Length: 268
Image 1 (tube, rainbow, N blue to C red):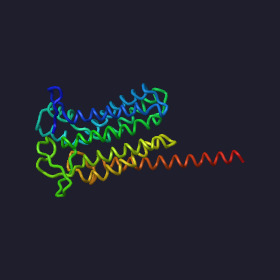
Image 2: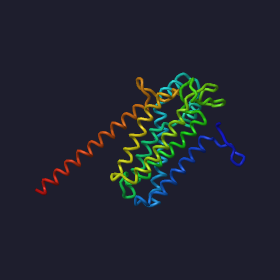
Image 3: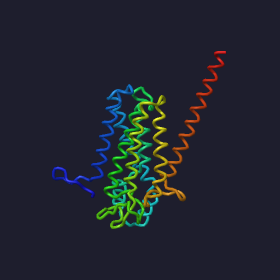
Image 4: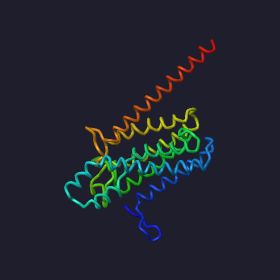
C-alpha cells in the first residue's frame, strides 16, 4: 500500500500518516502546555519551528550517510545529475538527524521567547515520541526501513512495495519500533508530571529509545543506512547519546553535591 484516495486524489500513505502524527503531536503539546506554565502561542511556534528543524536535520543526515552512494552514481554516470539529485532529495530521512535538528531548533526558538529550551521538554519530548511512533507505522505500510528475512510466524510479506523485497517474509521491525515509541510516549506523559528537573524528560527518552533503536538495528534488512565498521550510523549515535546523558547526569549530581557542601560550610 503506497497511496490512498482522498476526494478522488491519490495521496501518498506515508506522507498522510506522517502529517497525522505531527498534527496529533502538536495537539498533545498544546493540550498540556498550560500545566507546565507555557503559553499556547510560544508552544505552537517552538513546535512548528522544531518540526522544520527536524525535517531539515533528518534530510541532512540521510544525505550524509548516502554520500558514498551519491558519489558512486555521479562518477559512474549511471544517471544525470538532475535525476540523482531528485532521487535523494525526494526520498529518505534519518530519524536521529530529525531528533537532533528538531531539538536544537526548538531550544533556539525557546530562548528567543525568553525561556530555556528545557522549559518545553515536558511537551516537546513526548510529542516527538508520539509523532515518530505514528510515522513508523507508515514505514510498515509502505515497506521502508524493512526488517530481515525470517522463517518465523511473526512476519510481514509485501506484495507490491516499491522499497522492500516482495514475496519474502520479513520481521516487521517498523511496527516493533512504532509500538515501542508509543509505549515510551505514555511513560513520558506520566513522568513529565513527576520530575523536578525538566531535563530529566529528555534524558529518560534517550535512555528508553536509544537502547531500543540500537537493538532493532540488528533486525533491519535495508542496507542504505550507513555503516561504520560493523555498526550502523544510528547505532553509533545511540551509543553516543547514552554516553552523553550519563556524563550530563554525573555532572549534575556532582555539581549539586558541591553546592550542598558549600551551603553546609557557609552555615557553620
